[in-house]
Image 1 (cartoon, rainbow, N blue to C red):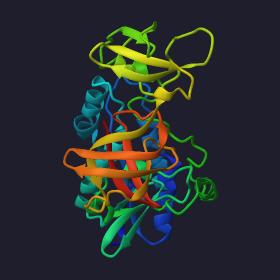
Image 2: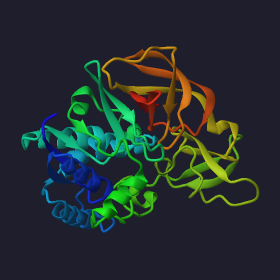
Image 3: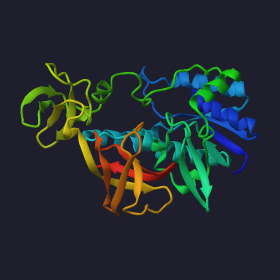
Image 4: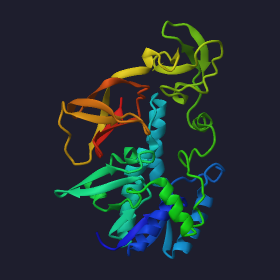
Length: 352
């Protein structure tokens, strides 16, 4: 890769150290702050403070910084599908879409138009070139590995991407930031998505999706409560159900969209919360070709989950069937299933 790199500076410690490390390695580094959400009445989104922090970081490191507004692209390519999926009763992962559509598509195109040879972000993942193909690897810090959110990247995107933090642990990043006296060395990591911020998630969804009250039922049909809308709940959810009483806590186990009924069960280990297979659609394979069927791989059905042994079958335009060696807890339609061969992320699809 060439020497001119545009780093996505978010105002956080990870992207700050990514920019610092690249500069120390001799690259010509330019910072770029992305504004992906625009809502003047929204006090929950910390974008203004993040931008000020990004400016302070660039000043301390001694690099140029620019800002770009991708809020229109975000609403069209990410947020519209986010709402559509929730309305259909599924639980989408906007971070996956944001990476494939904004950070590694719109951002990459913008960076190349600036004359850059590559981009870099503060993700905990790695890129390796092998036999003329680019592979996405897990970050060495298993507690921070973010390859799950990057499984939709392709060869062209990976060929122009640096992940400077991929071979380091989070504790090292804090230490590097403190030693370099970066102004954000102690800044708290952001959680969730900017447009949701720190507010209750259901409160946010109710701004866009109307309430559709219905019954909460046990698997035997006993009504035990009321919900305000199936869109506000996800498989495996425990908190916010409002069901009291004796015994084990209640969990969401299913949604009947036709009847507008939420199925709930008692106990974390209730059999209805486990599945040993799933169907995935909208498949994407990083190498450009699907993996072999019937080989044993590892897969995650949610972030921060250990890889579970699985086999793949029926890989075609209609999707894939994935069968696990052991039943998996709370597989949620709309989330992504991501497939690995040891440390290599192969790709995945959306659980249906």
